[in-house]
Amino acid sequence: MKRFTAVSAVLAVFLLGALVGALGTHLFYAHHFHHPGMLSALGARWIAADLHRRLDLTPEQQTQVDAILADARRESLALRHQMAPQIARVIETAHGRILQVLTPEQRKKFESYSAANRAHIRRLWVGGQ
Image (cartoon, rainbow, N blue to C red):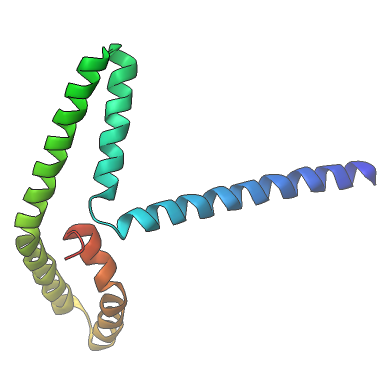
């Protein structure tokens, strides 16, 4: 009986850890997807840290690399904002094309799905516009 209790406790702790990890990951990405540009900032920091570690950069080089990555991030965000209307048109065209292949019942479900997910889709593809 003691062995069963010990195994059950270990299993419960493992499952609780997995659940907390999954929830934490979900909350992290949900937070960053609600703020356009946050993931690119995080990615730039990860790249900078990786370059610092792998290339053994001097403090001066670190400062220069950080500035270069910040410039690249600003430029890429500007491009994303410029392209946002075109991306929105592509999404709307795809939406219309999908509607054409669906039955009337499927169209109702798809419209409901689209309405519920429109903001999320726009944040991912258009950048929160």
